[in-house]
Length: 137
Image (cartoon, rainbow, N blue to C red; front, side, top):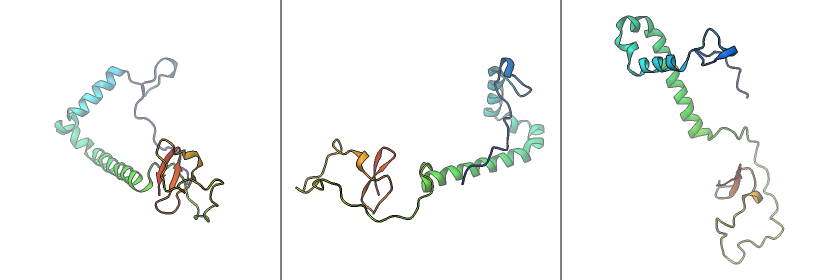
C-alpha cells in the first residue's frame, strides 16, 4: 500500500528571493522561535499556555504516535523497503560447482560473495543477499 499524499503544509519556510511567500522567515527569526520553544516560553507564560494548551496537547499526542510508529517500523518491519513478500518457493538446485565446503572448510567473510546468494530470506540459518549485505535467516 502506497503512502497517501501529504495533507499538511509547512508552518513556515526559509524561502528567499522570488520564492519568498507569506510563510517565509529568515534564519534569525527561526533561531528566535527555536530558542523560545527550548526555553519553555510557551509553558512559562500562563496566558500563552492557556490559549495553546489544547493544541500543545494534540501535538504531544501526535509526537507520541509518531514515536510509536518509528519504534514499530524499526522493530517489526526493519527498514521497510522490502515490500510485501510472497509465499516461499521451493529451494532451487545447488550451484553448478557444488564443491564449496565439501572438504569441511567454511568460507571466510573475505571470500564470501553475496551476489551469488538468493535475494529472499530462506530457511532458518541460511545466508541471503539483503540488498548487498549478507544476512542470516
